[in-house]
Image (cartoon, rainbow, N blue to C red):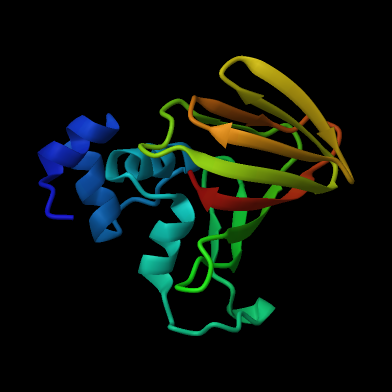
Length: 167
């Protein structure tokens, strides 16, 4: 995007030193850090993953779906279906360990339309201070334009799909 480290740092709230460490592979980013960087770049995490791991394949066999794991929280994110020229919809499967909290304190630069479909466990989704408890089989739609928080109670892990389209 032609941004300097200082410019991206100012837009994302991440230090130049940390951006350089992530860029060179010296440090593995957390979900929160990636969220802040994506907000500063004005892209979704899925778009960032596509750019980083793009293979040009339209068919996404499960064994080739890009996976990312947050080294701090244990969040595991699999890009099931990336956006393409034919569809801007992205589908990701997320797994959060029991007792995990993931916060995105900066909203994306461009709001997103997001569906969350629970596969298993319980997830407490908070957007702008409004909390919703989701259980297996539940679905939620939200316009992601404020800070968000994902919390899994300590009893069991949670797994869910995120179906996302640009705002």
